[in-house]
Length: 237
Image (cartoon, rainbow, N blue to C red; front, side, top):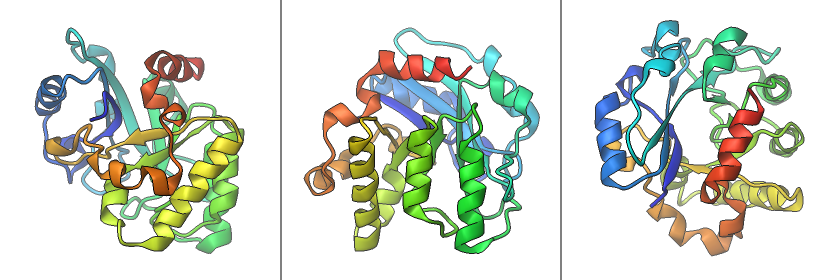
């Protein structure tokens, strides 16, 4: 069970089903240490408004559980623009980005999609690239992995997509490549649930089956180093 999970969706993502208080209650029940509420950016169909992402400073805190306020923002175009303005980006505790359907993004094919993500990764406010081995639009994986590493953006091992694609050999090979490149660069990656139902929060049981196959070791996972993780998040502010 993860003690830190920084990719959790609430009902304000439009297609997730837990309230803020449901999520907090589940995290406390599981004795987690740090969680992040990271609803989809406002361009996603059915997602929260801009006001939602500006309310984090008022979110309550609980003894033994640190709650971060964030967003899984949508990359919008080839320039790498995302659906939160820069002032709001800086107010968040954590900013995740990714390519998503139903967000206004138009498929630019491999070259254009690669350029869009590379430009987005150069945004100094970005902390995490979500589900990088399973984008909803195809891109050049080697270039994307390397650009994230070069720009100090965490590559995410997304447990939801691992579970969804557990029989897909290509997906596992891409995950292994991402892990190998991260290891070679001497950096860490982040493991997140991408929870849309509260039972998924912090649940990394699927990972146990694939750790050896993927070459993933505990020292590579930044979730295991809360002080290092918090310093990384604060450094980009």
